[in-house]
Image (cartoon, rainbow, N blue to C red; front, side, top):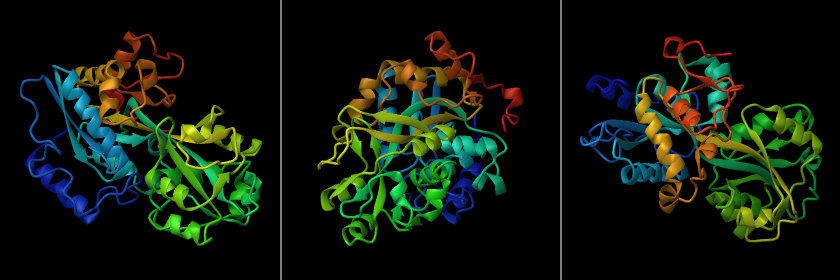
Length: 375
């Protein structure tokens, strides 16, 4: 189990305040760096572990929508498990959670698949500041599907028309922005991407900038069946927009990027993402950022097995607290899984028992090889 000594906790608290842990990029939801993510007792937002249960896990969760899902999973575990207790620990984004798990800060954390893939390949922030071990795959929590919208009156109709346009891919530091730029910079869309005027600003300012015609096009993203994220809902209410029609080149770039998945929504996509206006399309092509609960390699197998069981069998309990949690069964928990990337043995055992394990593409993590899963 990760080290929870007082010295370790004090070091991590100081590191979060000074920015020395995960400073290379706390992507994900906004986090106040002055908040103490461990809480006064070091056991997370909800205090001491339940001594009546066999296992306890502290789970790092960034703020905003991800925190809402994390608290819902915690509630599901509390209601539906007799053997596992779960505490939510505020953590500085998905990249920050990756670094902090490598530093033994907690047993699990919400991390997106693109960040995990970059850590494995030692790309971007992980090139200069690599982790010496990866967080292992556990279970899907929710997807963010990302797609492109344009203001009416810009003459932007298809992806090719974005060359020379002012394009807002979300706030610097957001996972959705990083994944978008990664996808668009792939061949064969790299030439269009290089001609875009990429806009940097906070998401709170973006709807106003669109209203003032300082942004021609912006990404939208949300959880299908639930709706778009908050700042997109705001520009939906303030600005007339339409979907930027995808091209074959964009589809190829999405499919060619290992850190995102492709989804096609062709059954009333405006309703799927709860748009409040006619967005001018019957089909949306989205690049998906899959947000998962990843595991510290030393977290006990039985604890992880039980976490996955609750997710698979009691998704309705979790959704009653937060509808953004999307998996409905064991197979749903594995959606977006990374090939040749270690699964925690407890998760792997659960998926094998449920008959959804992919022997051809998935790998069970070996604790004797914990530092050897890098590309």
